[in-house]
Amino acid sequence: MTQDNTQNQEEFYKKFRDRLDDTTEFPSNYTFKFIIPSDNKRIAEVQRLFDGARPQFQMKESKTGKYTSVTAVVYVLDADQVIHYYQSASSIEDVYML
Image (tube, rainbow, N blue to C red; front, side, top):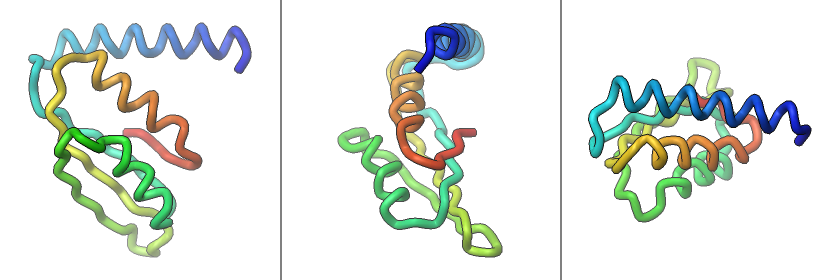
């Protein structure tokens, strides 16, 4: 990753943290949404992100069956925990975070 990309990511997550702190009262349940190719391996990777967090999952396949939306509701303590989950998800190939 280039220095520019690293700085852009740091700036993005700083702004995101500020928005979360302004709009969300922590601790609370937080809803994470992902779109991924309908591949059991990738779905399992997303689910593993939340191991130990007792998430509530909801999945819905697209009309064509090519993609699956994964919604996870997780109790989080603060904005940093939300960001940690999103940063972890970014390492999964072809995952779109909403």
